[in-house]
Length: 181
View: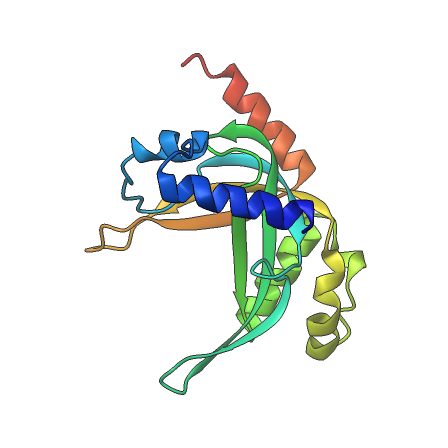
């Protein structure tokens, strides 16, 4: 009989006799009560972020099919906060920037990439080339401003994010630090 099976037999015999010691983690967890969590607070402030592209944090062109047969088609840039310059967040928080596939959405996407200084990292010769090269932004850093808003008649606060240039960021931080309150 090998040592592993002998140890398993001894532990099983002790358990039958009620002579096992409780695990420290089990003892600790026994006194805890689960709390309901409505999710994360809406981020407000200015953040340094890095672009991600991994499972559940995709950057690129996404098509999602819904149960009712409809589908949503959009460009998405997913970012993780790396540094809190001013605000209520902390490193590791995730934000999503979504852009419609229509002309207005593509213009917003290209404008945000220009503002972030990342326009040269993608191929923008066509919508198809933009779709295939957007994931190449993975690992790139940029700055964003985040805030919350509510629709009229809706109590749930929504997250909004806008890309900030380094120049605008310096000016905004200088203005905020000179405010006496």
